[in-house]
Amino acid sequence: MAKAPILTPQAEDFPRWYQDAVAKAELADNGPVRGTMVIRPYGWAIWERMQAEVDERIKATGTQNAYFPVLIPESYIEREKAHVEGFSHEFWTVTHGGGKELEEPVVVRPTSETVFGIYMAKWVQSYRDLPLLLNQWANVMRWELRPRLFLRTSEFLWQEGHTAHATEADAAAFAARVLHDVYEDFMVDVLAIPVLTGRKTSRERFPGATNTMTLEAMMRDGKALQMGTSHELGRNFAEAFDIRYLDDNGDQQLCWTTSWGVSTRMVGGLIMTHGDDRGLRLPPRVAPVQVVVLVVRDEQGAGERARLIVEELRAAGVRAELDARVDTSFGRRAVDWELKGVPVRLEVGPRDLANMSLTLVRRDHEGKDTIPLDGVGSRVADLLDDIQASLLHEARLRRDGGTAEVTSLDDAVEAARTGFARIPWSAVGDEGEDRLAEHGVTVRCLQRADGGLPAADDEPDLVAVVARAY
Image (tube, rainbow, N blue to C red; front, top):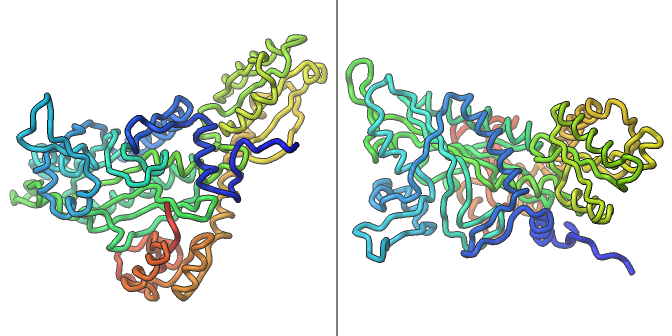
């Protein structure tokens, strides 16, 4: 009798495969309250790697980390009407505390433009205080009708940056810098996910923003996932919260503000971009464990040799882990590490040592190789770079091969059944967005013909990237 697969095959049921992968790789579990999640240690280790890489890039822009309260007075949010209209259906509101009804309800933060705005107004006095560049790592709460671990949960983790600037041009340049130098660089260089950068249409724009820029990635089922956004807020929030400064002429001026964020949704994107029917496939730069050394049988010094190999790998800068659990079958252990997506597996047994060699298994493709025991540290370190590049190349080929150039809405809808479509924005417009929406298809972003980032919605010859999306 054929052995049942550990995961539901992607081709059979991709959403079920995703749920299986999250559970079997021990990434997360559903929390006790609907829409919440418990992130397990291995899932948390992946998020920590992401957080560290993004945080380093954020700080390189001159932005400083801070922390703001999770509870926001309802009156703060109501001061920015467009914000309320955009988020009110997602609010979690607290009406009682200490057993008594509160004088004013408080909102569990869905995002923090309002509370940042209050304190920016307090801290900014003159042009010498600008730009004010702040970021916080936090959790947020938004009511989610159809929760899915990492992708859409009522509570999720993220970073949210908020900045104030003296000029519109400076604010716009900074928002674009975050998009490219922080987010795009991280997603391509670390996650090995090729992302499209573009401008959101007016109906897809963040509530209260004058411009929303996005990073869109294609998952293995052809759907799009919004990986992050960066917003120009104009003077909307500055006016609502009176964020002003004295210019060098002594005149009062309103600031220009931005906000931007990425979240634990990136973990879901990582899974769905690279994972296969055997589980996760983690790019080495984000993998908590880059190499696992498995003892096949602890005979003839195999266990001690495996320990020395781990030390050699760590000395070469490789995140390596020893698996000497010989009381568990080798096959079970190998499958578990495959599920977790560890980039390289080294197998050490008596037969390998007799031949002064190791068995090497790359997670990014099928098959096994035999490598010399000597110089394993440097050899594997070089191999990790090759695996990183291989996963990015594969994902880029899949995305480009799954993107169709079309000229009609009917063709765009058809192409979106299996991937992305690029269509002239002039052939879509507001009416076309309505027609696409009837088929569950949205405009993910607007780009210039060469894939560049538009400076305005009404630039000539813009291209709309349309797809079904998570």
